[in-house]
Length: 357
Image 1 (cartoon, rainbow, N blue to C red):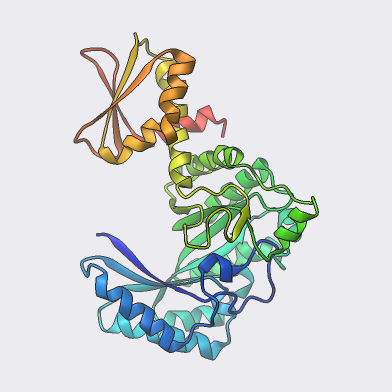
Image 2 (cartoon, one colour):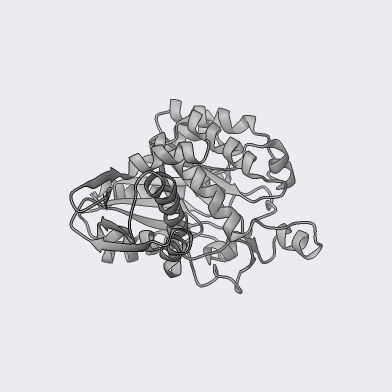
């Protein structure tokens, strides 16, 4: 069954201070505080066009929900719960800071039917947390994650890469620590320099250099392999494009691309083809791969990057044929009689070794 999300953004509500990367009003496109009336209006508008055969969730995003005044929390949650009680919505999701969780808060959230709690962790490296002005140490993340799971909620974890002092090794460390906490889902965000943030100031002073798009792709492909082989659902990679979130608008620097996840997954497929197919089988002039139409663009690559790479390095024409096979499958023609049938999980397992993870 398809999942549909009704997002309600509460920018900066509850946040004790601005982290160095954050300007939620720019990121969410919302600049006013959310009221009960606003929440109800958003929900009603979304329900008008959402397929009721879907799993529908109301999601409070944008700020630190559990740090909001408790009365405001209850009022907003009461609005959301009324749609669960009526059968129009299935469950509630919210995001918050790791240092804004305790047993009393969790007890209250359970009253209103909250199912998923996402923690904006960003990193588990102490230097990255300090330099990003997060206001807490890593130990609180482990404690909050434990409390959330012990209370019966689904746990979501969010990470960022490219914050001040960050490195590929620190990103991989954070991902491996996430896996130990066994979350239901993960989000990965490359750090972007947004207007009116501490990062913009550091950038202008020459004290911060964001990760390039190429470096971010190189890191995130390894993160995805780690999560996929551990059966952890990665529900978002990269900020969703909005009128503000595009290069030259609110975003002034950083590895932004509107199809960032597809760029990453396309490079993963290219790495597999190069290291596990071309290196192990002989092809004459053409490499033929049959795939579900949903995977065609990933195989071809952005601006035909995969096709061009394979032709330039190996002198092989990459021919992609659309066929009615499962989205999880690729069929590679070894010769006229033999077809290598592989699944995406096979690819991830092989890339684990290719990337020396």
